[in-house]
Each structure stands twice: as structure tokens, then as C-alpha cells.
Amino acid sequence: MRLQLSFRLAEYWLASLFQRGARKTYGTVYPCLFWLGPLGGGSCDFLAPSSVLFAVCFLAAASAFRISRPQPAAYLGVVVSLLFSRDIQLWGEMTEVTREVFGHLPQKGGGGAVEKFLLKSDRVQVEIISLGCIITALETKGRDGNLSDIVLGFDRLEGYVNKHPYFGATIGRVANRIANGKFTVEGKEYQLALNNPPNSLHGGNKGFDKVLWTPEVLLNGIRFSRTSPDGEEGYPGELKVWVTYTLDGGELAINYRAQSSSTTPISLTNHAYFNLAGQGSHDIYNHMVSIEADSYLPVDDTLIPTGLFTDIVQCFRAAVSFFLWFLEPLCELLEQAVCSSRASLCCLPPGEVAAVQDTAFDLRKPVELGRHMQKFQLPGFDHNFCLEQSAARHYCARAHHPPSGRTMEVYTTQPGIQFYTGNFLDGSLEGKGGSVYPKHSAFCLETQNWPDAVNKVTIAVLEIRTSAGGKGSSELMEVTHTLMETQWLLRPGLHSFVPEDRCWLGCVPPNVDAVTPGS
Image 1 (cartoon, helix red, strand yellow):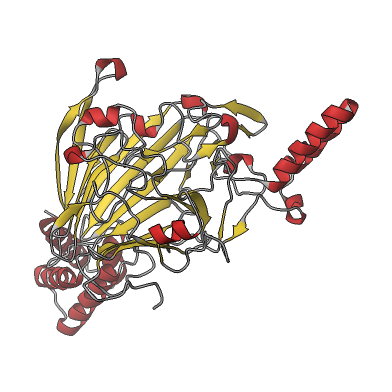
Image 2 (spheres, rainbow, N blue to C red):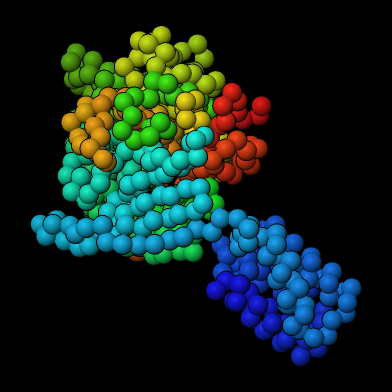
């Protein structure tokens, strides 16, 4: 269809331009058509290499042959662009997208059919359901050439309807924990459900992982959308959200976009549990892991990042209240002054951002998880690592399983990544194929904003704010700089290191050391 549309668009534009005698116009108008949508239906990729190449080839052909008939020029230009276009991938993997009914929600939960979508290329297969945009399966090849499912989950819908640890789900409105389930936005305090006492976790009792999304099939993926009503789970503003999964050859990408009617905190992520040995494998101790982060956030006993200055204010308040209750108003003034002026915070100690140097959290070079946790007597990881602050996608983490050769690299636009080693898995759930999932049988790499950012005066708060247009107006915000995005690229063998705007999961052949960025 895209090929036919390309020819027809080319013929139409060329014919109209030549018929009008506007020979000079085609040099600007015609290439712009392909910049806006490569080959009539591709993704909006401005100045895509394939599009520029098409324009150059067309202009060269037109100049060399001084073609006055439209059809030969159109055919020549389209054929050349097809040969080099990554959008059409004439000789590469095309993504097959199929759908089927996965099950039906119980009537007490609102009812409705849950669909499953299979995205399939020559190298990768991923299954996603419309309940919670959950990744239910992700299959990729090992060095033996066989596909294995590397994410935890369930065979049937009932497993996802019942309580589970967010297997493969989209998390929102705010991923991770919010201390005491409280935050203040524009002078108003909001109280959330304490579904992980004493804190609110992953959006509350019924977060984005537990609702049906509306699907839209794309050429190489699936886009889900929903509207979160004002006040849902205690959050302000009506929020429209789009989550898009695309599979391009071996690359699986997740893109998040949101639009709100009023200021609200937001931090979206995917909570897939990975075991590169294959789901159902007993542990992840032989995985090699590295995270490109110079700092991390220490946490308290409830896994809330410790904010030094915030804690000092609270301690000072308690002391004053006990000994000199009449000075309590001074604490109020102090706290208001801190929260109202971010500029003044430059001279204050930050929320506790600790350097990883010489600690158990220094994962800048690959470590074998089992030995590393034993060396430092760690019960596991459940910590946010602070990433490079950049609007562009950048490398942030890598996991490698030497026996199978599978390797996973993660790139993101988000400011943090939560590394979690399945500490709360206890073997009580029956997963796919009758598997059980004990402690440390999987890991998560959740790209997101820093936990409890909305309550940390020295941590950047990720919010969607209303536009200056007045009451009731809203503006589309592509959050976290330009948008929130995570990508995985799946490859069956060792390939050259991919560009910075890619990430991948692949296989390293025997006797070849894992490749690290820049090596």
C-alpha cells in the first residue's frame, strides 16, 4: 500500500507541477512532501536521510535527463529512495501487526474485551494487551538461534486482573513512591491512596496498569490512549495520555505523551520484569549489569529518597514544637520561604544525591549481580540512579547474560532509572507455563523521573502545566524535555554499536566479551 501510494503521490505532484510550467517549484515543494512523511505514510521524520536522499536523487535525475514527462521521473525517484530507505526496509524486516481477543474483564470491574496485539519481525516478537498496555511476552533469540520469552507474566487474563507486582505494565500517573501520599501543587495539597503504606505507589489503587486503553493499530506498532478524569486517584486535572509501542526490525520503542487541563505531576514508565536467561529461570545472579550514572538517591526504610534539607526542617519543627511551642510560626515561615523560592536553594544542601564512587552502587563498569550483592551484603537493588540530563535519547544501562549471549541496552530521555532486582517476588505467583517467580528471579530497569520529586524542594518536579491562555485552556506538553521515551533494540548477534538514539537487546557470540559503550 505504501509503495502504491508513493507512486501515486509522485505522479500527482510531478504532473501538476509540470502542467503548470513551474519547473523551478518542484525543487522545494516536492522534497518537502517526503520530509513530512517519508514515502507517503512513513513516520514524521524531518530531514530523514532517506527523504533527503530521495530529493537529491530526483533533482539529479531531473537535471541530467531534463525529463518533461512526469512518470519516468517519479518512478526513478521512488525506486532510488526505496532502495536506501529505512522507512520501507525493502530488504529488511517488516513489522507484522496482528490482534486477537485475549479475554473479557469481569462485569464488576466495568467489563469490556481485552485485546492482545502481536508485533512481529524476523528477530523479535512482542505481545501487548489493552489492559494497562501490558507487555505480556517479549521473545528474542539467543546465540543458539532459538527464541525465548524474557519477560515475566501470565498465560491468562485472570493473572493480570488479580493482584500482581505490575508485570509489564504502564505505570502512571506517577511512577514509584510519593511520601505519605501527599503533595502540594499551586498551593493546594492533594491526598492520594496509601496503597503501599505509608506511601502511595505507582499511581494508587487503580493506576494506569489496571484500566482498559483504546488501541490504534499503526504500520509498525500500536498506540494506546485514554483520558484520566480530573480527580482520578486523587490527582488534579483531566489528563489525556498516549502510549505508543513500535517495532522497527529489532528495535522496540515506547513513547509517552500527555496533555492536561491543569497542572499535575506526571512520571510514566514501563514495569517489565526481565530475565535474559528466559522467564521462569530461577535467578539473575549470573547477569552482568552496568548503569551509566555517577550518582544515585539513598532511601529510607520505606524506600523514599532522603532529602537532607527537608528532613532538617522537619526535625527543627519537632524540636521547636516540643520546647518552644510559641515559635512554631517561625517554622511555617521558613518552610514557605524554601518552597516558594527555588532560586534560593542553590546555597542549600540538595536532596540527598550521593556519589556512586567507592560504593555498592557504582555500576559504571559491568558487575556480576550475584557476586556483587554478596560482596556488599546487599539484599538487592531498588534505587533510582541519576542519569545525564539531556533532551536527546542517551545510553543509560546494560544487562548481559553470558550463557545465552543475550544483551540488553536501554536508552532514554528521562532523568532517572529505577533498578529493581525483584526483591519482593516470593514464588507465590504461578506465571507463564506454570513457572514460579522467587526472589531475584528478574530485574527491572524503569526509566522515569526521580521518586517523590514532587515533595523534594531540591529535585526537579516533572509537571504538566496549563498554558497562559487562561482558565480551562491547556497545552500539549511532550514531557521530560521533549517526550518520555524508552527504546530496546533486539538483535540476534553481535553488531556494531548503535547510534545514541537507539538501544538494543541482542546476543553476543561465544568467546566474545560484552561490548561497552565507547569501547
